Length: 65
Image 1 (cartoon, rainbow, N blue to C red):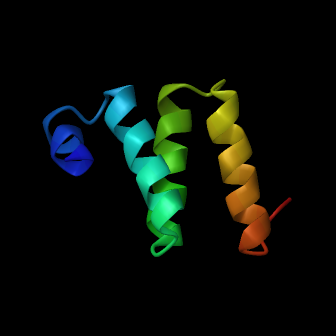
Image 2: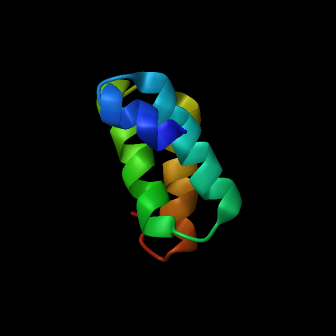
């Protein structure tokens, strides 16, 4: 559902936001989760919850700065 909405409107914030949460909850495709989080931040660089989720994901995968 979110991917379909993204295909229709790739600059829409909400579908990327929802996709990032789904991918994080599934915890199966972490590269896709990271990409979705980065897309959310590209649309809203100040979204604090997404920044925190990305930091946690990077720490979990051993790539924290």
